[in-house]
Length: 405
Image (cartoon, rainbow, N blue to C red; front, side, top):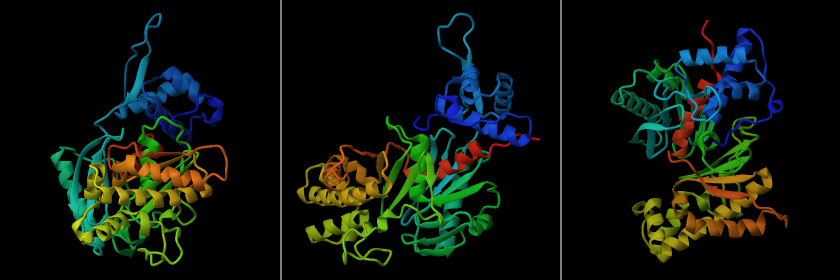
């Protein structure tokens, strides 16, 4: 997995002690290492953490008792008895994931390895936050019952827009037409049985999902996830940590101005990247070039036409690639990441849009420096924002693990 633990034990500071607080920290660390390196032996864990073998064994016993991990014989060919390897135990600790957007929201149940156990899609109308929350919660309840799951270990919510997760408020979501909506209160009123709830911005959570469960074979310590949907958002990961900013609104690159006095954006400004490279913008250009109505098309239609050789669709997608390249060039200058990951339906036309992106980036991004930033389509099979919501809940299982009294 991409979030690997450094082999050098000195690269992290681990704590040893008998207090409950220190034990919780060490337990959380051991659990994370098992997730990142499974299958792994007790000896390897002790070497990586610097904890004593007896401390590791005691922590492992707790995790085994709580059904978070299981052990199996190593298939190695060593002299004497082969060591037991430790891995995550699946099917025991499941989380709910709700990605609210308009007109389509997704609701799923996910295991702690990121695998999707089930998903349903719901139609949501913008401008009615209470009903949207209620519909999605009922869908999750029904999905849990259909999968014969007694309880969920947490529920994560993904929302497009500016989210104040500390105060549980959706400050502004253009696509949902929500403003200053107290999401936390709505969840508690609709689902008092949800004891562990967390939520965040969809683009940020997409980056979190890619960090935890992505399969790209490259260094993912520093990257930006560019989420291309009705709007454009981005999540920033630096040193394997999601960067949210002082007011939890970092990464609003969709609203950087790329053309003065350009098209009007959903935010009210003119010339934003979102007004040129979002799904809506692509559909609008296609409708204009074909003298049709935008409402009669979807991005999926345009992508399929472009892949199958339709010249107008291909040209429209190339234009979207150009504008994405302009935006990505600016992101590279601002963040200097190792990787840019692009998510959304647009990546289905990657062979069309990628050359256009790179043509612009090579011209604009590097100031003549001889280096390349990798620009890749998302590696996630599960919709990134849905998996991101699940990852937020899964992260709590790993980070906030508490030993029973």
